[in-house]
Length: 200
Ligand code: GDP
Image 1 (cartoon, rainbow, N blue to C red):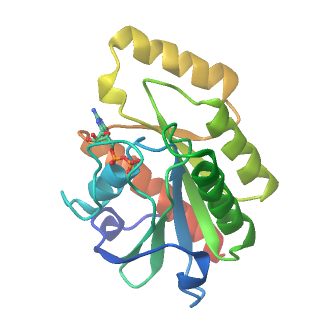
Image 2: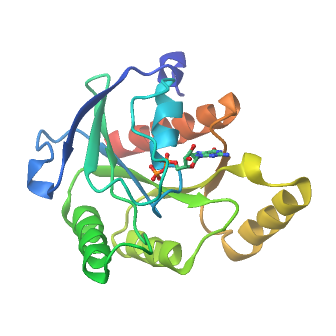
């Protein structure tokens, strides 16, 4: 069972780093956030933390170039990876971020869970599908967080749900909007369930 405290975690920002060597090596579980640039990862972290400005939300796409590290109640880490697929970034930069994310996911031994955040309005893209393949090959437990659902009309929402059921039925997913408290609880619940399984 997930304790009530799980839904009001104390989350602190630790540091921003640019290479994997600077990440903690204390063996505590790491929960990673990956997704396209501007998909709303920072906003999601703020929502989970119940804070407005813990993570820096971008007004323009592609600004988050660092790995941002947060600590949850001295128990585990949230690792916010740079967004992939920022069209205006040079090809070298895009593949640099891609390699960094792949290296992290494939070589870090204590990744307990991954949240793959996708944009509800755009739907999962080819790059998101590549990420799904990478996560599967690395045998990492993950959930797809379909973010910004508040931007969808009722008919768009129904269409999205059909796509998720037909094309992504094998992937657990959570619909999320930063405006909905119940969505926050679903995401926190998924993280805590994954941590319980990881610790067994
Ligand atoms: P990141 O680059 O993935 O960290 O994305 P940000 O968190 O910086 O968000 C990018 C933009 O999407 C910002 O303008 C946010 O206000 C907006 N955004 C994030 N989450 C939501 C959401 O659930 N609903 C809506 N409508 N906008 C969102």
